[in-house]
Image (cartoon, rainbow, N blue to C red; front, side, top):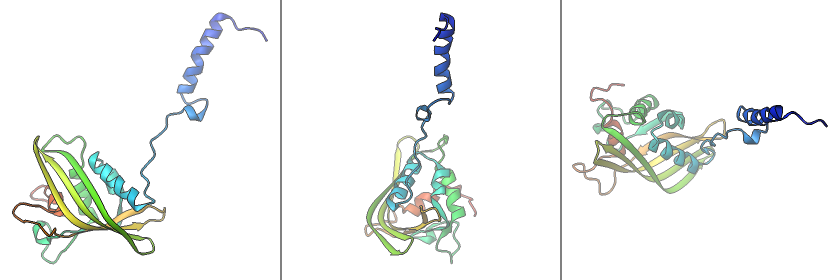
Length: 201
């Protein structure tokens, strides 16, 4: 087989790496996208929620919520926008909260968010439903040095969607035995504290 002239051989060696980098060649050399969260288990769905809070990714956190989602605060009277007869807020309000809370580019007083779900027990009361008994902590860094943490016992209810993924459909909050209304805030109070004072659903 005839040899290519030196100039052509040089150009060939330059072209091969360019073809690989541009997507030609073996698929194994193509850039690999990181895998998405494993939502086929309740534990995976919880880890994903914690991760999206800490990285302040509101769109991804919202995607983990089912259409019937609602939050039941331990002290409904402390939630300014709830009417006297209301005991929970809906998915639309939770979206407003998360879009305000989880903003990576935010440069005002809210600089860091940390959600920790410490699971005590997971039960499966009916097919496709999982209930997580957990102690939940939500920490916010206010300004540059004021770290404020809320803690509440909670029941988190997950439902399986059509794709076999667990989505969060209810967060039911309770008061701790040692809760002090003058010193402590609940998770619900912590979440709504980031909304504008005149917020109205």
